[in-house]
Structure formats: structure tokens, C-alpha cells
Length: 268
Image (cartoon, rainbow, N blue to C red; front, side, top):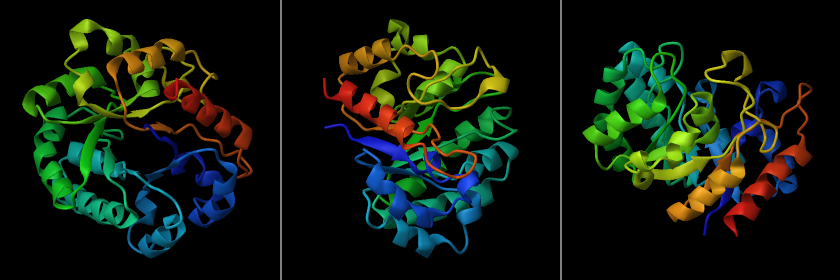
């Protein structure tokens, strides 16, 4: 049965100093089945043991890899990207995660040199498989082309590739409707994880990129969940929308409303 996950990025953020020690006080108030752990670059090299202690009491089936990996690949710095990828894999395995979420392209470089990113995928997959982990590539924002174009190229080059599909990322590029189109049926078997977040902006509306809780934007989730059920999808769902206020406190009502909405939909 699908699990409802909360991203640690939604509850541990800059406003509360990215203090993962706060998890012990936060988790009893959240109505989720586990966590998708979001790794930050600043936690590399010294925080690993502390992170493992802080996350030990919780189920962490999904590990969101450091976003700079894809950025460095885009910039042509594969060696450092691979080193960080391997470090993430080691930490993910130690946490008990099974599935990885990767921004294969990222940052200001984004998809400007997408051939580099596509070519790098097999080497990264090999590392993930060394650790017994399932690698998924997310449909992250592009500043040159669009995620669906790159996902199709990846699926054609690597027929066994797996994707994490994010509703907000798709809506940003006006590609959520494309998910439902019969001509994109090639994509459906590759989706192994969903990020379910709302979006309130327009097409590639960089001024309104904020990830919103379910119901706070304009995504038609009735249609989305109807389609997901039709797909026969049985994997997990993660909500990433931040619930951290400017003073560092957690807006539990908002976060739990999204988690409850997810649970209602997947138990229909």
C-alpha cells in the first residue's frame, strides 16, 4: 500500500537553521507514514553521524540527493558530482532508504548542456546499484527546453530508467496535462514515485515558483488522483511544500491538511 511521506525539506529549512535536531519535537505532530530525506550540500563532511542519529527513529524510504550533483554534471564537473553522489548513496543506505530522487540537471546551468547530463546517467546508475538503491530522475525545472523532452530522450536511451514525477514542476512547464495524454503512455511505466505539490503561477512563471500545499494553488488534484488510480500506481507519495514560517515555527495545520488529503485520495 502507498505510504504518505513528508519531505524533511518542508520542515527543516533556513528559517529554523536547518537544525535536524528539531525532528524529535516535530515528528509527533505530523500525520505521515515516514520521511523523504532532503540532503543539503552544507551537511556534507561532518554532519553524517548527527543526521543518522536524528533520523534513526523514523522510517526514511526515500532519499532526495544533493541538488548540486546535477548542477556540477551540467557544468562538466563530473568527478566531484560522482563523489558527492557516492557519499549520498552511502548515507541513504545507512538511513535505510531504498529509493533515490536525483536532480540530473539543476541550478543556473540547468539543462543548458543536457547531453552531458544524459550521458552521465549510466555511471550514476552503476553507483546507485552498488549500494542496492533504486535511482529515479525527477522532472525538475528547465531554463532551456522542458522536462518532458528530456525524460523522453532519457527513456529512449535507457529503457529501464525510473522517474520521480513532481506535479508542481510539471505545472510550472504546463506539462501536467501532458501526463494524461495517450501519446505520452511511454512515460507511465517509468514513474516509480510522486511528489505531490501545488502551484499558483503561470507558464514558467519564475516570480511565482513557491511550492504550495495542496489546495493553495490551481492544480486539479481530482483529475490527477483519478489518473493515478487508473494507472494502477502503488508507490509512495511525498509532499514537499514548506510548512516553516519566517520565525522558524511549523505550520502543522497546513502540513497535515496536505498529508490528510493525500491519504484520503490513495485509500479510495
